[in-house]
Image (cartoon, rainbow, N blue to C red; front, side, top):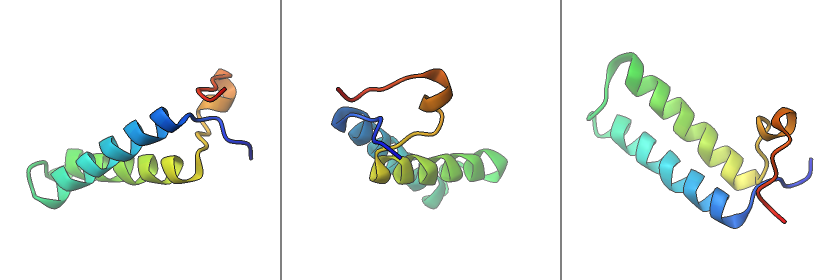
Length: 65
């Protein structure tokens, strides 16, 4: 599994992931939408941590040089 994400891409994903989780955690977004945002936030944090996005593979996207 090679890295396919740049540092900028990883940073943006981490920030957006934390925002999504915080919105759900603080109760600003609830019900189904809140759960979906929380799950997407966790996925963003995981992909940022490992520097690999599985969706980039079939789309042949690489943000790192």
